[in-house]
Amino acid sequence: MNRKPIFAANWKMNKGASETEDFIKSFLSKLQGQDFPCEIVIAPPSISLPKLADLLHNANAGQNAHAIQIAAQNCSQFDSGAYTGEISVLMLREFFVHYVILGHSERRAIYGETDAIINAKIKKAREANLKPIFCIGETLAEREGGKLESVLRTQITGGLDGVSEKDLGETVIAYEPVWAIGTGVTASSQQAQDAHAFVRSVIADLYGADAAAKIRIQYGGSVKPGNAAELMACPDIDGALIGGAALEPQSFLEIIRNGSAD
Ligand code: PEP
Image (cartoon, rainbow, N blue to C red; front, side, top):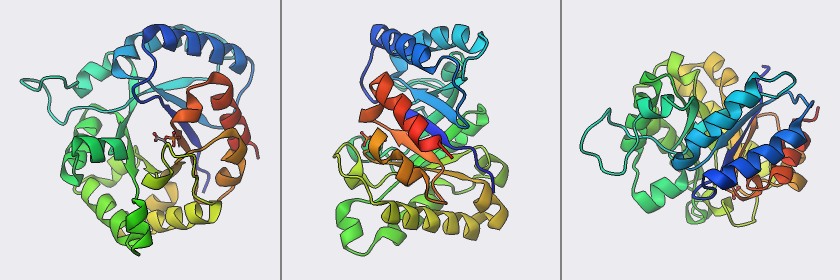
């Protein structure tokens, strides 16, 4: 199955509009004339989405530019109304957002997002034709307690409850072991491959072998230029969700280059 790898930068709460502009100008100049066989996605803080949309609109229209897609880091599960601080899917659409990261472990752990909330957000995102980057992953205690598979199965089943096969086809899964996020500790390529193969098998149980073979599953957790190639060489790993190492244009570019080399 030929799945196009997808490399997504999750900037978290870093880079306002002016730093976004600095990054994009530098990144585009480094990217100039290069065409990698992958999708490139950037998820800035929501306040920087208009600036990013503006900068990429011009760049993506230019010749020889590798297209860059925009992602949001979150969305509301509601359409509009009295939800102070929230942003709706239609508001995101106004800034050419194509992807939305949902279920990130920081949203689960710090903001109490449950599988049911994440499920409602995935469905709301699909209503607006946004593509979810649906994050799942176990804590170290869960892994060491032998609960890896049950945790992943519960997160997948809960997050995708009632999601159609068609909508699954527009969804990317990001397997991110919580103990590897922002810690500098990366899962070994064997640990990552085993978890990805398991995730694909759960998708096969829920949606059938064809859907499982098609879905892209990114790895996330301290991906760096030095480990991208080995991780991306694993048969069930289809790109990366990158935090810290995607804050610098050169390092994000090297991950893309190293990770998408044949
Ligand atoms: C993330 O935030 O999704 C992530 C994987 O972060 P880092 O690359 O810094 O571990």
